[in-house]
Length: 279
Image (cartoon, rainbow, N blue to C red; front, side, top):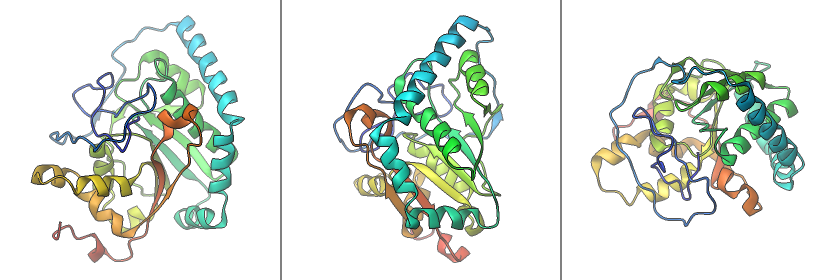
C-alpha cells in the first residue's frame, strides 16, 4: 500500500488479477501524476491462501518482526504526533459523530500487502493495532489482502485480527460505525467502497484512513478518458461533502508507509446530494 501522489497502479508483487494494491515500499518516490488502471468490476468471492503450509519457524520470525515494529512505532515521534492530532477536539468530534450511540467502531483493513516481505505493510498493520490498543472505542479488526500467505494469516490471527474468508472487492457496507483502514490502496478499491456505501446513512457511519482524496481530485482532473473518470466517479463526487485531515509523516522513516495519507469523514445530509448525473 504505497505510492507518491497516489499512484494508482501496483509495482507488481501484489497483483493477482482481481484487485491490486498500490505498492511503493522501497523509499521516497517522486510526486508524479498518478496512473489509472481500469478493470472490470468483480463480485465478492470465497478466498483462502493459495499456500496451505504451516511453517512455525516462519511464523516465529514474522512475529518477531512485528514485535520489533510495534516497539519502534509506539515510541516514535510520528505516532505520538498522530495521537495528538486524533485527540484534538475537532477530530474527536468527527469520530463521536460517526459512533453516534454505538460504543465501538469496527476496523476493516483492506490491501495490507505482504507483512512478511515488506516493512511498510508491517508499519501500517502496527499502526492499526496500536490505535485499537490506545482507543477503547475501536472494536474488532478484520483484514484482507488476496496475497496473504497462510503464515501471514496465522500471525494476523495471533495478533487478534480476523482474516476474512471472502474477497469483498472493497464492497463492505457500513451498517454500523466502521473505520476502513486502507493506506495506499488503488483508486478502484476506494471507489468500490464508496459505491457500496452510496447512501447518506452508510456514509455517515464511515471513517476512511487512506490516500488523500484531495490529491486524487487534483490529478484526476488531468484525465480526459471517460472510462477513467467513470471508474473513479465516486471519489470525485464524494469530495463535496468530505472533511479530510492529512497526517504528517515527519521523517523519511515513515514516509513510504504513510505519505499522503488522510482521515476522511463524510457528511451527506440528503440522498439528492448523492446524484452522479452531473459527473
